[in-house]
Length: 364
Image 1 (cartoon, one colour):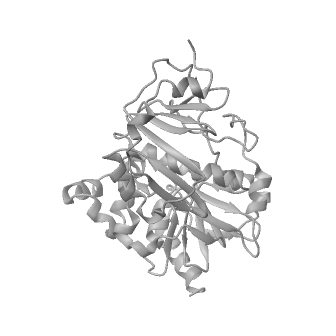
Image 2: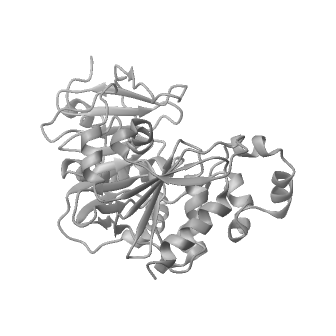
Image 3: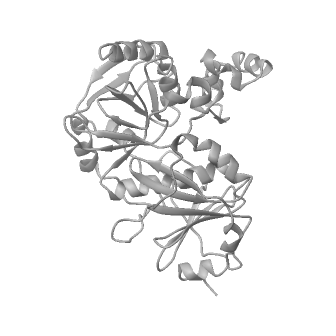
């Protein structure tokens, strides 16, 4: 027996286990989601999403989480090709007549994405970050179908100007944005996914409720964040060679409101400025910011564009294929009116901060 339709999947899941769970109502940019899961995950997610909690009411999507459940019939999994520069297996998919199963290779969490049911199942409580991502994927999917573009960028705003920062993975987006958050007039918009849509005089921007997951180097070089690690760990990190510290992958969740204040998060903004990090750790050249035309720089546009991934179902019903490119024309249209600057030379977060002070000082 093979899985052909969503009904084949649903027949092997027990949704009655969440019948008495208290829903978590979420709102972002006019979109609404009803999230249904049991404790202890319910309490953890309610705290995580606390700044986008909404009143009960009609919703655009319901996300169900079925802890510990598995399918008796193994899906016919196919590897989802990773982006250039990424290695190892991460996601597998099984396309159904009316939906898609997505499996996480490392954790075993499985997701059903379809118009009629949006469900996560498996070891969900042990992997709350994947449930957070699944919820945010629904916000992203709805936005894409409404004409937004996903940018691989972090962003801050002072409610007059909004600065997005893009760059290759591990290039310093989070470190740059969190350093800029030391300016008391700025609010955090997003850490790694920024939605942009054409507008006048400038495009609209919308972040998602995803807290930064930062590496030890970001913590070490930002005194405000030192409390995330104990003194012994900070000392050990300070003794590492610079290159080894930069390459260290050890993710820590930073709850922005806990370190900067509950009033320092604002997901909706007007996008005015975009910086693309194209600097190099081993360069001895001075750090420079130069205005660029993205239409003439496909390499920089490529650093901004972000595929929606295996969960995206298009308005017509078809799911995205792993070899489908992003639409450069769509991004260029969405970013019209934004001042784009390329940052080159050596890595210098002090220079980025100084430029940020100059940028936002002009609007204060």
